[in-house]
Image (cartoon, rainbow, N blue to C red; front, side, top):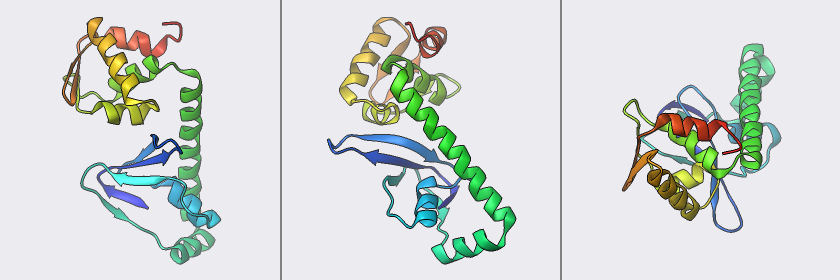
Length: 174
């Protein structure tokens, strides 16, 4: 799958019903789960969901195999994308294993806020993106709001103290 327009979130659903966002596929990028299925023949282990109106191209297995065999340029693009996504997955594992929830939350707020410092995400969406429960996000957002770092509204978070969030996102001792 190659996204032409829009955005597709790829997530893994756990046995407890919670899910974690593995990565997002943006225009010009491909889905590594699709590539894994095409290369290995296994079923997909993740779910994909468009988070906005999306146009994409699905490459059938025979076409993919033929291009992989016959085109060094195509093969190079596929394996470069695979390597890039695997690196991102390793970073996700490291982040989930070694970064505190507060640091992951602060990093997400900084990364996804618009130029005015506003982020339009629900607590459930944030929890999914940083790999925790919605209730945990709710408590951490309340704490950040009490400290003056953010102002939380329904479905919208406004950054009030970017420097405080940057310290939280980068200092593992905080």
